[in-house]
Length: 147
Image (cartoon, rainbow, N blue to C red; front, side):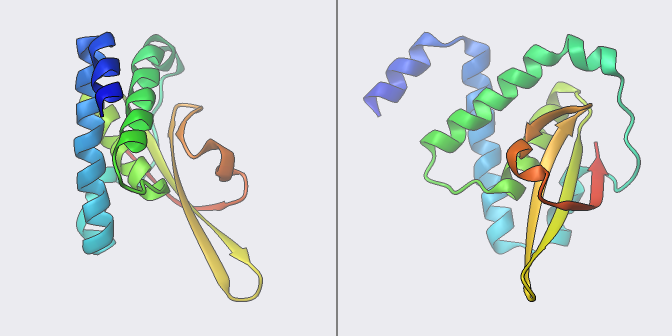
């Protein structure tokens, strides 16, 4: 804990704020995933429709996107929560929405063997991955949500 406080003292106020925001959203999203039916909190991801993205605006706000990614990584590292793909997608969507950055949440499935069905969620901003880049290629997209 002492090490964490020392590190927080060395980062900017904006980064501290993003870290606190990521921690709050991570706690809320983890609670929602564990105890609430999906249809109660799916509205946080946006509408199930097409996606409008302007590549120029994505390049301009690339630093904000990277800062949000770092804050989410730090929050997952220091909080005793699992933070699986759905939780990371919800947290990323909320953080980017607050910054006014459009994003798209993807939900995919993969059939493993005869009976096992695996699901995955990931988030993209334009053509850039926010979460879930490594696993995305193994899943077939079944739906997307734009914000």
